[in-house]
Length: 30
Length: 438
Image 1 (cartoon, rainbow over the protein chains, first blue to last red):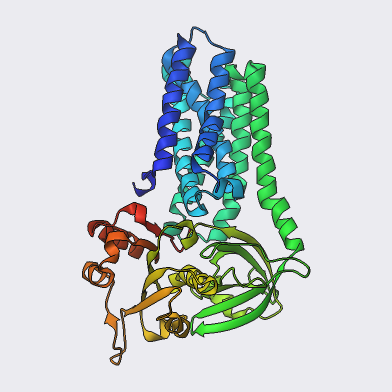
Image 2 (image 1 turned 90 degrees about the vertical axis):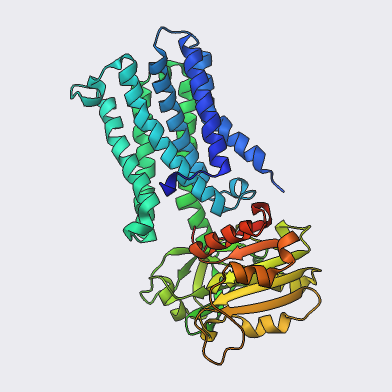
């Protein structure tokens, strides 16, 4: 799975965008 | 110097803007958490697809703090991430209340069918992009396919979300959606049509073709009449489309610039005949035209102003960006100490040997050159064999403790050298490398 190797910038963007997705879904629901 | 964090934050803001607008425009509704998570995955997935165009359009503002050899792999990885999000999107919706007919039913709306068409296209696009080399697909063929699939996917996803998403009934999100689509298509049109047309109006001219070794050629380019040559840092590269006629292929390829920017009237690229296209490089003639898009990259000693001592490691034709750096040091009298480890197969493969030997022993830069051959003739007096741990430790010596390393070698060699250097105590922050291919 070499292609899933993430550099720091990619990891940063994915991590914070996923947190934002969770937060948006929570805000939307409750 | 443009700052990298500001670019990353701008990119994150672009990705997260749809989620913020969605939350603000519809703060409360009775949907389940899983269902809303599915929606958010869809919104984020679309925003990433728009971001893909921005990353791939070779915009100087985007590329400059990172270099294309960072932004292109990032583009590839975000493509994988978007595909994962958009696979999860219908699964979460189905799980969250939309029901499994959404996935397997045939009686769904036309806009659901659009998404069902877009998803396999996206997966094919991602698969071809990460497996192009191992599938043996030519770069030009892949690029044509990518240029077709990318905009098609974005258009399908736009039409799907516009009609399927309850979120897209809110005006602010509609405005944002149209704006993002327009941005993507404008950038795509600029990158693939307008800029190439503009550059082709002012082509450079090949003014010299010099054979360096049996397989390596140097092309010298002069700017269009009345125009100044673009400014560049030593070690940067250019995209070149040679217009040679004579039934020779017209393809855009990136080549390192091997000359020094201190030469104001021309620049050169030194190219090894290897692939399908570069095999024809020796057939280039004086007077041929070339569309040039440049400069790109950050593989330059100027990026390390405080590094007084440097180790350059070149594998074969990887010498070219390092040669540009060395020539610039010579032309400007840069006060640097450089150890060049130059690995080749045989004596016949040594490019720039005389010029390097002439520069060695000078004061500015203070250059020491060590040639290493893997298949030398019996008369070769110098270093032989692969550049392994023992050789690196012995040849670099005190450099390991404080020098900055610039590596340009074939990818497997680069990876192995970085591992060995890390083992020998050189932190990655002191190693800069450039792969042959993007």
